Image 1 (cartoon, rainbow, N blue to C red):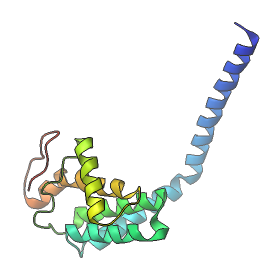
Image 2 (image 1 turned 120 degrees about the vertical axis):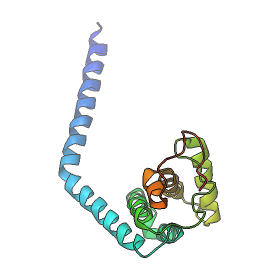
Image 3 (image 1 turned 90 degrees about the vertical axis):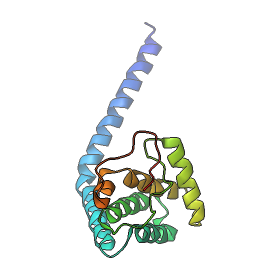
Length: 161
């Protein structure tokens, strides 16, 4: 093997090892902080959802999403976690999941999320991720249990309740 190629290969291997090692170190250094923030978001969503119906949870999440401070990856993730927790404890809204496609069909779910964001007047890149919480929730056993149903839709089918 050529010495130059060998040196490049060693550098690539060392670079990959450094990236992995740095990632592990970063996670160990920040895991408690991240998990704590997730726990706070879940508790806030549950508290909010205790007083809201499903549509109210989405409206509250959309309101938070409009705030400039929430226009970022971390804030958007926190908002999505809070929305999910809110939906799980909220009161059912009649027709809430009608025409919401299954999260198991990512193309339909993405198109629905984009349309939902447009209807809410949200054009930021984080809204679709937020609305995908709704597609996941509408096809979940938790939603069925809330309504007294015991089945979820088959893969690729829309949810019509």
